[in-house]
Amino acid sequence: MKRDDFLKQDDVRGFIDWLAAELPARSFHLKMARSRFVPGGLDVQATGLEAVLGHYVWSTRWTDAQGKAVVSGNWHETRASLGQLRGWLKDAIARQDEDQTLAACLAILEWGGVRGAIVFLKRLHAQGRLVAYFTRLAPLMALDSDASLDALDTDTVERFDAGLTKIHALFDDSGSPIYDSRVGAAMAMLYAQYRSQAGSNLAKKHWLAFPSGAARGKQIRNPKGIDGGFAGAPQFFRKAVSCQDWAQWQVKLGWILRAVLEQCDWFKADSADMSARCHAFEACLFMLGYDLRCFGEAATINQKTNAKGSKSRDRAWVPSGCSFTMTLPHLVAHSHELKNGEKVSASSFVWWHMATQGSTEQTAKSYCFPFGKNEFDLFGRNPLELDLILAGGKEGLYAAQGSPDAYLETDTRDQVCLVDALLAGRTADMSVPVRTAWLLQKGYAGTKSAANTLMTVGRQVGGHFGLLDKKNRPTAFFHEYFGDCMREP
Image (cartoon, rainbow, N blue to C red):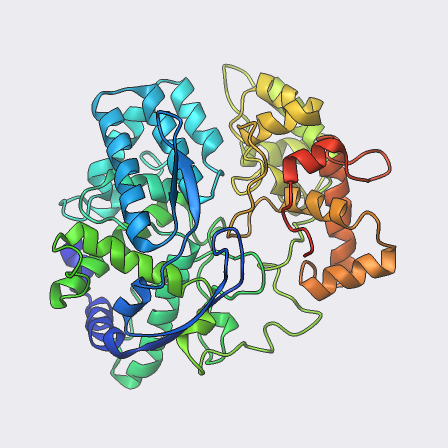
């Protein structure tokens, strides 16, 4: 489907008109907990979408090519910071400089507080095709091109996540938005409210189902967690949202933002450039998507969905059933059996495990959890790299993470296995009843059984990488790697 065909759909057209009419007068209660990204927390009221931009906050830093730290917090500083990153990336790609392209990409991830794409980016760099990858995708992601969404397929989009959406957006000149869990959550909520208000006048065909992702902590980023009977948003890293789907949604969102801005004069005070206005719009969505309860009194918690004892797995830190210390050697053994340079994949591992270990397909799939893209991203690694990871310890963890940098506490629910190791260390001095009660009270687990699973995985992962000793207590490397992350005040 091409842009004009997408925008002419009744549901899409109606939603665009609704946004243009509704957002200037909407009231929002922006309330954010104190964190490294929002040092002082936030608790303000804003009326109208443009007013939200004045409260934008993302306190972060990155290191430029000269080794100088670039610090930003508010929107004015962030816009300047992103301009520097965009210039670095575009210049490096224009010169076909693989090393500087990788450096710019890693700096973008540093600014964004994400690291999941590091292994993928370094793999492309090692293969000498990092520049070619982004160059090939650029016209397919551009909002003003005649490309079809169908071109963003398995042949062109090899990976997509919260880091890569930032890189693709910064490389683009047409206003392609950063599409992360916050932006997706805000759009999913707005669309849910649009569908609710439009009622019987609404087109029967749904063309929009904005995907989102789970957040750390107790904030809500899925409309189904809000009273109002809203449908749930499809979730990143699940079957309903492939990498290719995520890339297509970035383009579709960009088409919608441009269409809305063509009807309005929003954000022109700072710049008349459409691309700049699109990113200002996106920045407001980013703020609204932190916690969907910002949408007003009607946006209250769905108590049934979040009742005690049935905590959403999206917000807890309990992984799918897996035994890390058992399955990692299995993964490495399978990788060594592959021929002709073939790399281990999730599907090949599942069938290998069924054939050699006698597991059921469902069990084998659950064993894949620690190896997926949102965890240690081990599928596709070469056997030598996997051997290093299997050896464990500090170097094994650095190899798994693709970086020797200390752990980075992000804004989204990812790297669950590592967080479990962190929680196992933080609760090492607690008795079993006190620890279980603490995990339940904090929302890290929803049931006693889940708390036990969390601790089992955390101890296995922590022990393997030298974060915990044989008595499951924090090592010196634990404190070096995790620092003050998730430490009780």
